[in-house]
Image (tube, rainbow, N blue to C red; front, side, top):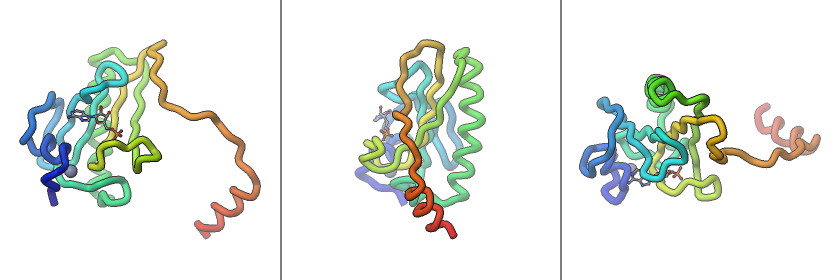
Length: 135
Ligand code: AMP
Ligand code: ZN
């Protein structure tokens, strides 16, 4: 279901124009308006899913296939030296548009883009606790 108040629904379905790199029945890939680096693009499903927890597995799988195809082309065309796939879920994780999207960020030597965290140290207690949820 599309959400009429969602800007990415409107962009994905062509109601709002965008710089489109790729389109099929299910996805549109657009250039991000505020790129972290040259070629920063977003894969948008045409259906509305708020985040990773809502998007069905098969749609996610096809989004990954689009990511592989389009990011490969971006990487080559822009002579990138690296590429990050980034996908944010929830405000605390930096999500600002609540329609699932996958960032493709080409990287260049010394580009100063920050995608990262300060590494912590895994405690035995956390390891035991978290592993126990998967038993
Ligand atoms: P996130 O923080 O993961 O929710 O990412 C949202 C991304 O969408 C940001 O990188 C924004 O720059 C980008 N963005 C927001 N509005 C638009 C728009 N109208 N067209 C293209 N990119 C957009
Ligand atoms: Zn939407």
